Length: 111
Image (cartoon, rainbow, N blue to C red):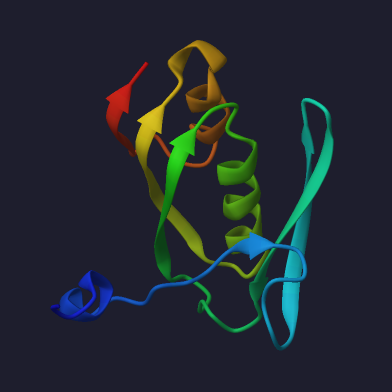
């Protein structure tokens, strides 16, 4: 098995997870869901002010979790360089929400 891609490229891999999943000091952002709300966190100090970050997620549906990730980065004065998704459910219009943070949006498969 080879080296993880982020290591091979020499770029950091930053985790943004549901609240309570990460150790150490974290920063959080809550957002609304169709059926309630959710909170995501990342570790404080994982990004530097002005650092350009690509947000990658498996699925773009309503755009809520990707937008929450963008808000966490902005709270730490980082720059949202763009988004990449494996699958987009285009009928849910999540692209409209994330495009407020960056027009650089890449998706492999759209339904």
